[in-house]
Amino acid sequence: MTELILYPGITEMLKEMEPVFTLFGIDYYVVGAVARDIHLSADPGAAAIRKTKDVDLAILINNEGQFNQLKAALIATGNFSADAQETIKLFYRHSIEVDLLPFGAIEEPNRHVKLTDPSFVLNMPGFLEIYPFVEAIQVTDTMSIKVCTMEGIILLKLISNNDRPQRTKDITDIEHIIRVYFDLYSGDIYEENFDIMDRYDTDQSDYLQLVCSRVIGRKINHLLAGSDDLRERIKQIIKNRPTTWWQAMLDGLNDEAAPAN
View 1 (cartoon, rainbow, N blue to C red):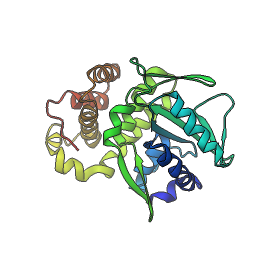
View 2: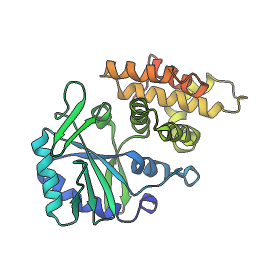
View 3: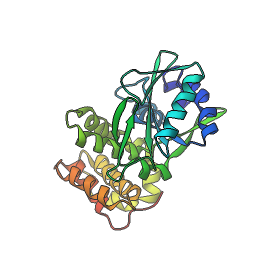
């Protein structure tokens, strides 16, 4: 059961946040390491390299006023406290750190989100593109949550590493996902992307990783179908990593007919 791999209290925290989000008509989905861990939990052999109790929530926001109202309402429950330095950060019962990552109409044309109390700037490309494809995953018998797709996680990690190359853990995470991707999604590969399995030499020691990298590239291409500028940026990022797995991912991005999910 997925809930067993979540840090104790995360499910409880999300349950307590849900009525506040509903009150303001705000949708959200889980991103970051918790989203990664939820997906990896589908296969006991694909355990995450690092587990975390820090939660990142992408929240669909119209403007800063709505963001501030939501944040104030969460604090008013008595279960959340604000961080003095980072306006996006809250603490749940002084133990779980949660970042509220606003995207949507609040974004400026350059994909930045500027908050003023205190001043804080976020770079948010990719979040809006991922949103239509988020997956509702059952985490308890009575609760499901919307979670960023695995390919969306990879997309955001590519952007994060490009913005901050010192974040080498993003690349480590992506390569770990590639290694276990077939164990997680072999059914989808056989049903939707079987042609890729004939494109590589089965005698290669990393045959499955090459197949999976190309499938991931195709799915990222599908996520970015309406965002030509971001697609080109991602292609350039991958071009700068001239190893076989990354080039297979680039080939997937360039495939003419990327299958829909």
